[in-house]
Image (cartoon, rainbow, N blue to C red; front, side):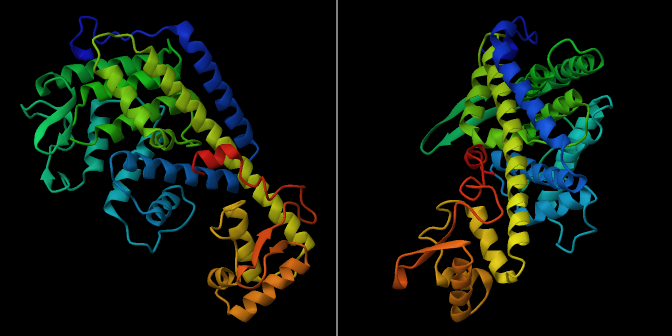
Length: 397
């Protein structure tokens, strides 16, 4: 039995007491994120939003097995945020379609969510009216009579059916109930908005109302609920990035919640709240790492204004790489390739950096390697070795 086939559907049940620790942890992380973000200068806040827009678009596409080009995503996101004029980079259709949804989920957070809005999102996601080479219904719910199933094909064997959604003929009624509930929660909050976001996403994915794009639109719907919680159109963290990092957990938790015959979805909401916590902490780590890097360069510029642009470029690469970031260490050959200088110039500039106390040299001959010192003049001791917090490293920042 599927969850939508139970007699209690769609009256989801959660154990508020069991959820309290996870929700408290998520709210604490959210508060930390808002606190550090509130201290950012406008230019740094804009850069943070650009990063999070880009992460969200790339990750929500990755979850669906689609790869977007980072440069294209950042150029389009910067244009939409008003950070740059129209880019000379040719617009990529899939990038623009994905960013349309990323933008729409937050841009009108304080407006009612109507069926027509979801149709607009879906039409924007498939501007050619096709999913790949297959023509699909766009800007409308699915109407095909075949069962809507999530399956894993198996060569020479029957497909593995993980989930079967309600018949197409029942989708409009199911969606009206979801939208009515969603709007009632916006107008008169009765549950924690993190819970509301988790339930909205699960409910939408359970119905699977469209022929394609359900995952991306479902994640946009949960983003909308979280934006309504913060009462802001600023994107300070990326839920899709966190879901992508734990995609096996995402798939298994969704499947377990939607394919059961019980309306108790406490486990799903608990897991979702944990993702909100991790996503917010990821932003905190990102901001702290950016602040540490700014401090590093401020101290370095004050102590060594004579550095050549090629030396600055390599030092920046070494800082970003962190301890052990360069496989085999920094060599004269690698320096020349990164800085775009000759071998002789690379050797001379590396020698100058060692003499200035910025790099340490180990090995001899062809085995000579260079690395940033753990403490630089004018900077905080150990800044380089701790340039990127462990949280940021584990979360792919």
